[in-house]
Image (cartoon, rainbow, N blue to C red; front, side, top):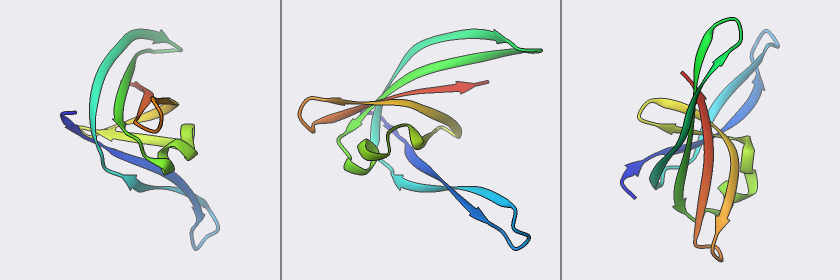
Length: 101
C-alpha cells in the first residue's frame, strides 16, 4: 500500500438562493494499493478516455456501508466508485473506480 488517497462522500445542501449545491466531505484518508484494470475510448459526440482502476485499502466500516455513493481522490483526480468488494473477513476492501479523461 503505497498511495495516500482520500475517500469522499457527496453531500447535497441548499445555498441562500435555494439552489442545490453538492459538496465533498472526506470520510477516510487511507493508504491504498492501486491496480490499472483497463482503459478504453468512448465516443459520444467527442472522444473521451475511460480509465478503470482498483484500489485496495484496509477495512473501513463507513466505506463498506456507503458503497457506491462515494468518490475517490488520488493524485488530484476524482474517480467515481462503482463497487466496493469485501476481501476476507473484514480484512480489506477493494474499490473499483472509473474516471473519464
